[in-house]
Image (cartoon, rainbow, N blue to C red; front, side):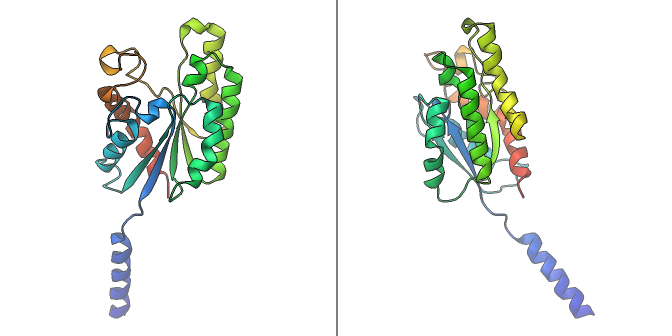
Length: 212
């Protein structure tokens, strides 16, 4: 009996000490994900990876963040490259942060088209077993109230329809802040990216925590 209890204790100890498997986050989007005009290590993906490695909530769990941002991409272009991005990864990502739509808006393209593309991308990621966090964007007021309503509303609508987490505004705390953006007034500088990462980090931690 004592031998059996000892073996059980040792078995439980081995299980408890077993290291957790590494996790991968895919940062899929446009120039906001690509680190436009920033030096290596200053963009969203590397700053988020560093924050996750230091996360107390994740307890030092190994997390790699893969940057898949392409400057200038619209939702149509992002949708077109989704499959080959996944095919080129060594391991399937556990979580994707999907951020697209800003270029559609800046070009005055149809919110309905952007919605259809983002919905298709969310469904494609989910079909491949990848958890999705959808990052929302806001529209410029000069596009008119109807456009702003339709564009900004597409993100919560897609998130709700597909049962995924919505991070309401990817540039939260950074947009229209002169000290946090580049000279173009739109893209975040390194300090701005740091603010973005700090604000989105709890949501990313919760998503990774929910993955068994």
